[in-house]
Image 1 (tube, rainbow, N blue to C red):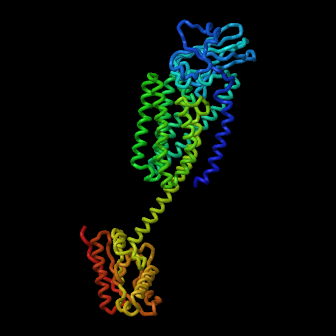
Image 2: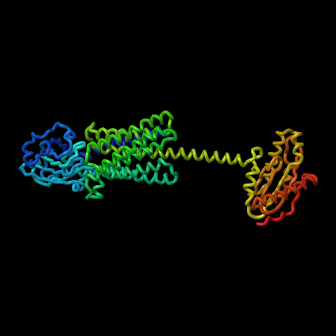
Image 3: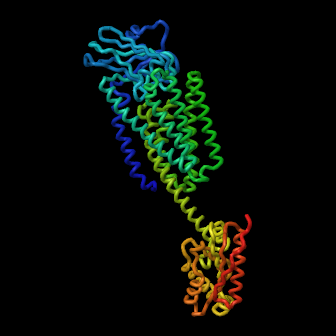
Length: 561
């Protein structure tokens, strides 16, 4: 299947992916958007006092510019209509030690909900979204205030906060559950499929692809927040460390897969050194982040993002080389990896603070890799098809070469070497027949060597027509032919001579042959020498007796074991 034939599939999957965008508009950041304003926390400040002084908050400075620390974040004035309606406060997962939500109602009452790192995991919903339920009440919600302690504020201390109803939250969970379940099911199916191929074919690139699928499956579980459902007491910061590690594992294994997927010579030794260096950069930055965070968190996170960006950049010279050498797999790579690479660049830009937060970008790895997994599996299937064709062609060439090595080119019969290899070791009593054309030198002198060659071919055809199944026929050299067959199934030598006498020869010249036969074992090379010596002596006797006849030799004495 060519890349052009894959284009309709690519367009269909892209349309499917874009169609899911409408569903994602109702998933993730659902509800009423909250526009946060920020002030750095100070000792002795209370929530009630801050509710009274909203003008003290900064509503214009981007959150990451405040740096790490403790902060208060206030919402715009809210008018949550619908009495006795259950409301949820939602925001994207961030690295923080403690988060407390204060809800101010129209009667002046304040409700506070405190969540530490470990308890935060229990509030995670699909999409890695913190969700805290406000108590059901008949009062009207006026404003929200967050007290965030120990925030690393890499991309914001409070990302995409919303106020959602129970119906909106449930719809988001259903849509995201379908999305993540489809992705994990796809990864699992492709993993099992490629593991079977890898076990059968043992190509190196397939092993890396299986590792990538395992990493993607695990990454989907952690990044979606489903890990918090499996281990509800795991700290959220530990989940984030695992998330960073799995994303690096997916990236490195994907690069290794691509380097080994292209034909030999596309990835030169120099490019392999670059890829190896970049792989170690990603590994080191990931290990440092996982072990040292939150120490120097911004430096570690920036190093991690830059290492992943360098990994993407390492593909550029590989692709250029593949284009120059007209790789058969470049089209598949372009189709399968254009979307993941585009989203990877978008994520890198977001990680470096160059673009604002987007739920789609935050989940782009899962969405784009789902498409990549399908198309890469088609590419792998195409690669396996080409490998199978190459293997079949190689086998055919090997068989043809072996056949040429074992066959006499003039008559198509076995040559002496192949004849001995097949004959020696046959069990039971064997009949050896040696036939030699009479006065063949005179035939060549009469009708020429071309005519003599035709006589040899006619005699070879006569032998084939006279042989039972299982008999071996060979041209031993010159005009001498040999036949080995099991005793009781051997052809009648007289019948061979009769067929030869009536065969139509060039220029209708008469051609006869003399035959010597012998019966005996043929298990060892010594047996062959004895049988051949006896049959050759019988052939000589037939020649001496006037030719065009058969002479049977006495059974040879057997060699001692």
